[in-house]
Length: 169
Image 1 (cartoon, rainbow, N blue to C red):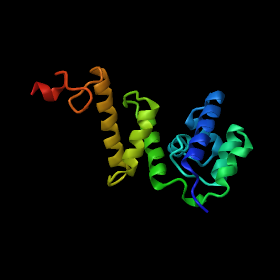
Image 2 (image 1 turned 30 degrees about the horizontal axis):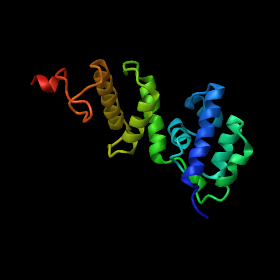
Image 3 (image 1 turned 180 degrees about the horizontal axis):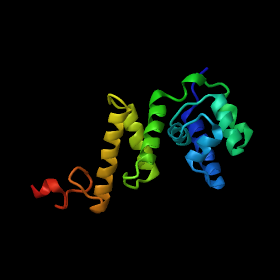
Image 4 (image 1 turned 45 degrees about the vertical axis):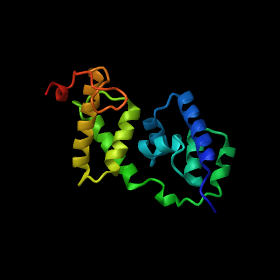
């Protein structure tokens, strides 16, 4: 048995995304409906970036009432069901919940928040509290850059416009 081909994962993810949007569901709502799958795990599956097995594919198909034939490529997959959601996925979801409870966190686009939470969860932080502090700092930096109009000396494609603290010396 082999892993599911990238093209099949991408096609499944596109159908998954379309069905979720047609229902008007967020990833949080789908995660709740699936009871046991986290938002960050579902996000990478929806993007076609994660191999999944037939059980998870079936749960997504059932939750979103997708065409049952979409399970075909996953029936021969060599993906251990118990290893689909990683520790980084679970830690990322914990970080997302921590940010949701933080009333002082700047508003952030969901896509950026998911990417940052995943990066910090997979990083070399001592514990989730330290990862949360790093994530919170990154969210504040993103909000500061947005407030300045999006340009910063650290962005290779947008040279510093002189508005950041570092350029003022």
